[in-house]
Image 1 (cartoon, helix red, strand yellow):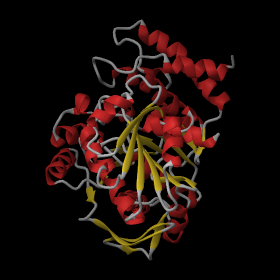
Image 2: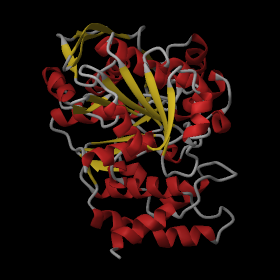
Image 3: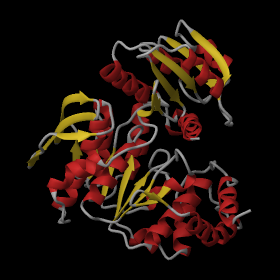
Image 4: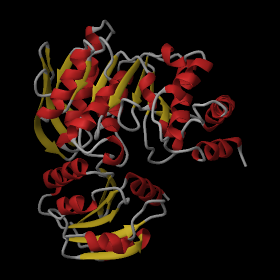
Length: 428
C-alpha cells in the first residue's frame, strides 16, 4: 500500500466531531508548527450555500490577474486532494502524504494532553495551513467547514471576510433559527477586517451588522453597497452587469448557470474591488477572463448531452429552490426525469416538495454511505405523483434513460456525496 493510501486512511480514521467545540486544539497545533497561519494573506469565506462557487470565482479572478492562489474547500467532488489546491490544481499525492507525516506526530502528542486528539477537519485544516505557508503564494482562500465561530479555519487573521448567505442547514449543530445560525457564521468577523456579504434577510443582516460594528469591521452588502443586474440566461451561462459606487462593469458572463451564481460572482468581484482599494494591483479589464474560466463540478453541471443529463448537489432547501429556478430558466416546458438520494439529517420532504414543481417522474435511490436513506424510505416521503423506488442508482439511471423521449431532461440531485459517486460513475 502506498504512503498516500495510508495517509488518506489515517485522516479518515480520525474523529469527526468533538463534544467540546473550540479552537484550542488548532491553536496548540499552530503553536507547535511555528504559526503557519500567520504567514498567509487569507480571504475567509463562510455561508450556508455558495461558498464553494464564490471561492472558485475568486480563485479564477485572482489567477487571471497573474497571482498564485491556494484554496481550501470542502467537501470534495472527485478526489480528496481537491480540498487543498494551488492555482486550481489539487495537491499531489506525494505532498499530501508528506504533510500527514508532519502532522501525525503532533496529533499523537495532542491526544496525550487534556485537549484530546484533533478531529479529521482540524487535521486537514492544519495540513492546508502548513502547505500554503511553504509555498510562495500571494493569496489563500479558506472556506469554513461548518458555521464559523468554532470552525477550525477561524484561527486565521484574514485580509477580508466573506459571508455568502445564511439559511437553515446543520440545525442540529448551529441552532434552529436564522439568527442563531447567522451569529455562528458571524464568528468569522474580525476587528477592522472588512466583511462582504450576500445575505438578504433583514434579521440576518441585523446580526451581521451588529457583530461587524462590535469589531469595527466595515460591511459591504449585496443589493445595498454593490449590485448585480441579470441581463439574460444563455446556453453558455448567465450574462450580467456588476455595479458598485466607483465602478460599473461591461456585460459579463458567468459560465455557471442560475441567478444564485451571479450573486456568488458579484461577491467575488466585490472582494476583488476591496483588494484593489487596499492597494493590490488589480486590473478590472481581466475580470471577464477570470469569470469565463470558472467551472465548478456538480453545480448545475451538464454531464451528458444525449440525453441531456444534469447533476447538482442541492442538499438543502435554499439550494433546491435555486436549482428549480435554474431549471425553469433553462429547461422550462421540458419533461424532467428526476433521480434523487439524500442523507437522513436533511429536510427531504420539503426539498422534494420544491422539486415536485419540475419533476414529471422521480426515481428514489440509495448509495453506499453511512447516513444514506433507502429508496423505499425516500419514496414514502415523496409528494411527486409518479415516484419509483430503485435501490441501485446505476439501475435507476438505466431505467430512467429507457423511459426518456427525445428532448427530455435527466436531473440527478440530492446529497453532495451522492453526486460525487454519480460523477465518478459517468467518468468511467
